[in-house]
Image (tube, helix red, strand yellow):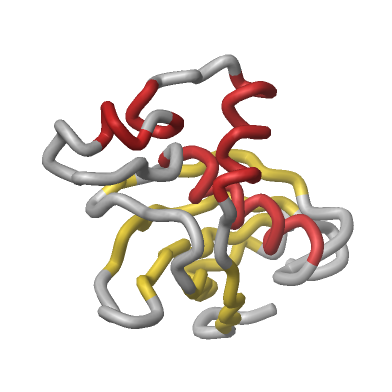
Length: 133
């Protein structure tokens, strides 16, 4: 992989995904699970856990770009807009830098709402992979 290489991945989460994430993580904030409570918030409906949304980065980095053998070293995150269930999103990745001696790279990570084209989440991942960098 070289600087500028990029990858896109379309996805969406269901309410069942949110419920399962709440069970596994223990984050049962009613903002994610209770439509009546969420209606009283600025979002007006339940939102996806920010970390659940960002988990797509781990999915792609570990299985697709760069793929198997990748080790997550670091990830910065900014949660810019809420994410909602049953909405189409696109995760975008671009190699920003490569250190061939250490087999590492910095990869920009971003989630875009497929309809509005607005960025919901962004950051930078540091990844080690001996076969790709």
